[in-house]
Amino acid sequence: MSLPLSAIVMLIFGAVVLYGGLAYFLFRAYRGREK
Amino acid sequence: MAAIGSAVGLGNVWRFPYVCYNNGGGAFLIPFFVAIFSAGIPLLILEFSVGHWSQGTPPKAFKKVSKKFEWTGWLTVLIPFIVATYYVVVMAWCFSYMIYSFDLRWGLQAESFFSSFLGDTGTPLIIGGISLPILLGLVAVWVSIFLILYKGVKRIGKVVALTVPIPTILLIILAIRGLTLPGAMEGIAYYLTPDFSKLGDVNVWLAAYAQVFFSFSLAQGIMITYASFLKKKSDLTNNAFIVALADAGTAFLAGFAVFSVVGYLTVSQGIGIDALTMAGPGLTFITYPTAVSLLPFAASIFGIFFFIALLTFGIDSAFSMIEPISASVNYKWKISKAKATAIMCILGFFFSLIFTTGGGIYLLEILDHFVTNFGLVSIGLLECLIFGWLYRIYRLREHANETSDIMLGRWWDILIKYIIPLILIFLLIFTIIQNVTNNPYPNYPPWLIVLMGIAPLLIITGLSLVLMKIKGNREDAET
Image (cartoon, rainbow over all chains, first blue to last red; front, side):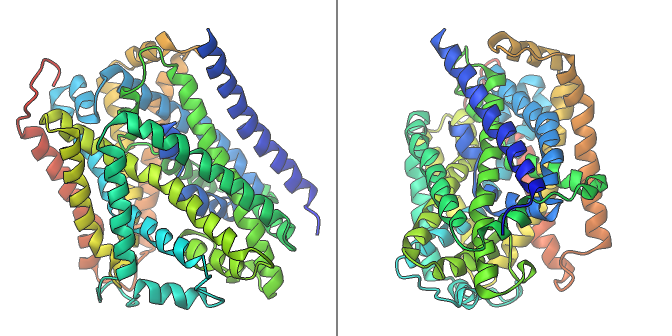
């Protein structure tokens, strides 16, 4: 069985918000430390 | 890092995936994200700001607003202490199961094995004896907590440098393994296929706010205590975003590890998902071990990985629940950190013993229900009211803005003063109505509910007032 398209969309949505967001704020913290 | 470790706990693995599945699957992510950004992160910023501004434990922080609020600070640190007394017992179960994983001792009879492991009496009215394996696990966990905390914040830093990444890596391995099993996609489809019609249901939105509130270790004095250790120039707002997204990201990842295996179990046993226990101890000690037993190869290794992940996720949360009260006692009475920690760990150990008995799991469920649904939500509400209304909230905003890149506007004040208290009041009223109209424990006598649910909350409230009245040994200008 393959994953329904709507589930794939929610998977991408969740991953982008959570892991994209986390990466962005970790990058900000790293940049802040560099300063 | 310690704040992330505290927030990420057993609930991320055994609560979030089920709540998501039960409340619209992938569609639940929408109210979940709304709850994170409208309540979770603003409250984290509040607690970080309070701890950083007061440079002290919760009793000191609340006393800084007004002397008469010191009791709220004590209540804030007593609540996680109560939670720790049973949380540690669940960790003791994980400890035993990690050892049992070597030979998959539960076999294909995980349910009856778990029952005999607990010495389950089937009712909280028959206490039964203390289970020796649980007692040994309990001693191991309390001793670990003491060893981590007694030397202070430096050792905590060293421990979380291991206990935050290790379980995350193990969870990734478990998720990858799970996703390669036959039937995994069926499980993930259960987890993520959205049912957008659920977005119109107020229960789903309340579930999202409750999930965020319980998962972020809010209203337990933990974040206030940890923020007091932060450097003067720490970016509080950025830290709050990191903690929130790391916690939610771990919960999202755990869903893949859990549901892929659940899908495998449904396919390999030819049963429906409804036949399986999908949350709480049932998921961890019955459903998941059953699936592990059915794995085609290296089954015991994945069992060991799973329980090590739970233990390492749990230990951060467990010692974070003891640290606020131990730091508060250490501060107010100038008792050494080692002595304060030892007192709390010994007291905690004795309180925990009741949950190692045959009726312990039922007592644990009642206490957890009342502490989380009423205790934590009430403290969150008190925090918003005291710092939002009785203290000048804009001062805390300015304090956060002094060290942060992301500037908080007046919208943050509005969230803390109006929006979040309204949500918490709604949550509280809704839970009370639900409990009154649909008794969650219809087979238990009312005195037991009062004894294990209501009395502990009343006792710690009274104790908070007593602790406020007792004169400390450190009567400086601020305390």
